[in-house]
Image (cartoon, one colour):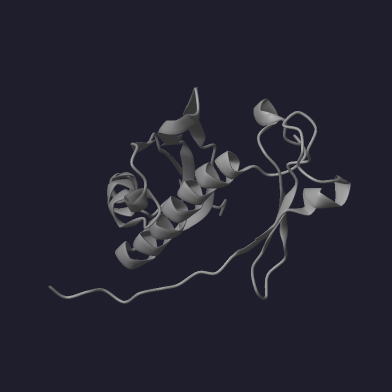
Length: 162
């Protein structure tokens, strides 16, 4: 069986909350952390506020939903360029559902809501259909054990006035 090309990613996670004191008591220790990736700006994070985190920082749950949204978008844009669909704008309001159970939790689904604007001469049916292919190609959605759905809306840009 042929194996595909491997890609490796390295992220350093630093618990910056240690600056506020050691983790001795569940209710009082800081959940602050920082992701460091060589050559890129750091990302400051915390736990979700429901789990005593800082609401002003990114949390792992937000970042998982964001990763799914970004991966879908990047594959979608790639496929549109290959198929001759010209995209002029793309916005997604992705939503994830997580169920917290005693001692663990899990995501049950993520739904993407991309609104894609295409040029007047682009094929709206092709633009719609490419979401299925983008979903199938997305590395991140292929790596999770819950459904990732999408409800896309295709908008044709108005032709420029003559």
